[in-house]
Image (cartoon, rainbow, N blue to C red):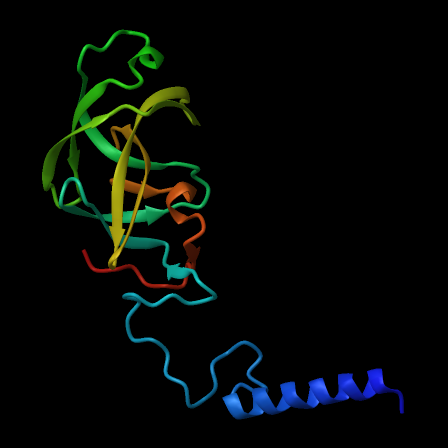
Length: 188
């Protein structure tokens, strides 16, 4: 037999032995019968190096020390928060000219808890929706989920008529999360 064939055969045998001794033979991507699924998502990354998150999640805004029942929306590019009484210090009518200026606003979660935050406008987003195109101020906030925190750009919008006061977009999910719509809704 040729040496290349023997080397491939040896590698295949070693791989088969490794798979058989690890308890994953025949599992087709499922855990072996004797393995325990994680009882909590806290600090556990699954599916490679990404966290698995459901279609809703309890997510805190660090700067507000306030938790929101958030909707995970892979169709939204940028995260959006319920913000009222938005006031730009030294603001002008042309929103684009307010970039870099300080902004003050109130955030309110579903429970009615509220905080007033101050930040800096980092962008003005043009967002298309059923009513047309609207311009929203964008600030940077730190979102926290089960010990994992990440600072991202968040647009400010009056979400009074909406069930979820925090909408998580792809900018927060990117590189760190996979969405599993079969995960249950967390308790508020």
